[in-house]
Image 1: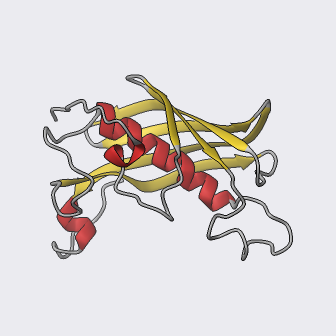
Image 2 (image 1 turned 90 degrees about the horizontal axis):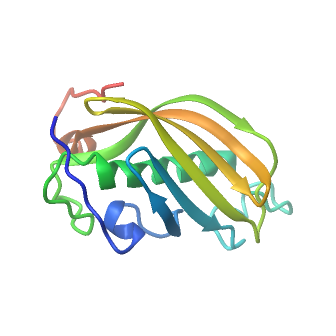
Length: 171
């Protein structure tokens, strides 16, 4: 499959996600095989009040999502199967990029709390056609918060939208 490279001035140019679900706040760097992003835990995230009420900790599932969104930025930037790519029109793109199909492992080392600046480093370990294997580390200062390994794939947008019946996501 032929891939196209894209460069945008903001996170929203790479990802379809929007507030309040868009977690990546800043792209620090992108290379052919890695991406580094940041998010500051504000304490005002929509999911914090119901997650261990009284103990504001950033949920592990949302840490996984943060690393997945970061990997999605790398796919959109360097491994995009579309020459024209527009995240502002939900029906524009032929493919949905970076759909999570497998979490191989996730290890949580400490908690992320309001005020923490999370630095997400994602490395592309392998890709075959439209399937991408990643490893990621999320850190706050000198402390590792999480390490994980996961797989994303690009699928036809029609499958995501439910317009093609009986289609499965390739893993």
